[in-house]
Image 1 (cartoon, rainbow, N blue to C red):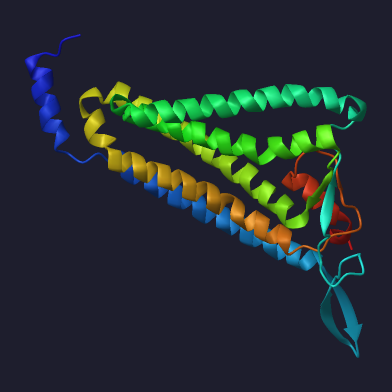
Image 2 (image 1 turned 120 degrees about the vertical axis):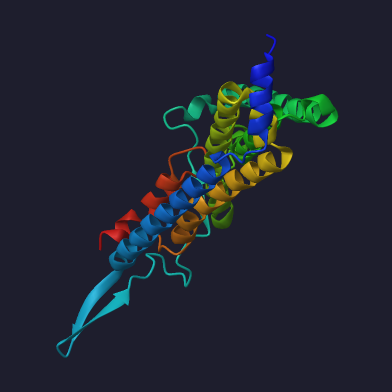
Length: 262
C-alpha cells in the first residue's frame, strides 16, 4: 500500500517527537516491583512470627526461634527425594523416552532459531530479536528441569541436593516470569507496528529493544529472588519427599509447613 504525500509529511514530523510509551513502561515496571517487594516484606513478617514460640519467664514474654526438626545444626536437609510422576512409578522408564524426544526437539529448535537470527543481519529487527529472547528463555527453562527428570526416569536418581533444589526453583520461576515479560514485549512491538507504522523504527530502536530485554530480565530476577531467600531461611521438618519430578516452590514449602503451625 502506497503512502500519500500528506501521510508521509505527517510521519516525518512525528518522528522527531519523543514517544511516551517507554516512560509508561518503565513507570509501570517500577510500580510493579515496589508492590511486589511490599508483599514480600509483609509475607516475611508473617513467616517470622510463625517460626517463633512465645515463652514467659518471671512475668516477661519473649520469643524463641523454632529449631529444625532434625538434630543437625543446619536448619535445612542435605537433600530432597523427588518422587517423579506420582502414580506412574512403574511406567516412568517408557515416559522418559517421550520427555527425551521433547527435550531434543526443544534444544535443537531453539538453538537453530537463535543461530539463524544471529547470522542473518536482515533479521535484526525488534520482532526477531524478541523471538530470539523467547527461544533463549525456553532453552533455559527446559534445561533446568529435563536432565534431572530423565535421571529420575532412567537411572532412579531421586536424590537432589538442597542448594541444587533451590537453584532449580529459582531458574524455573525466574525464567517463567522472564518468558511472560518477553511475550508482553512482543505484544508491545506488534501494537507499535500497527498503531504507529511510520514511527515504529524510531520508537523501538536497537537500544530500546536492549533496554526492554534488560528490564524483563531484571523483573524476573527481582520477582523470584525474595521467595528463594525466604525459603533458604525457613526451618524444615523431617519430611524430605517432594511429590514431583522437579523442585517446585509450593512442594518445597510443604516440607516446612509442619513447623509453621507450631
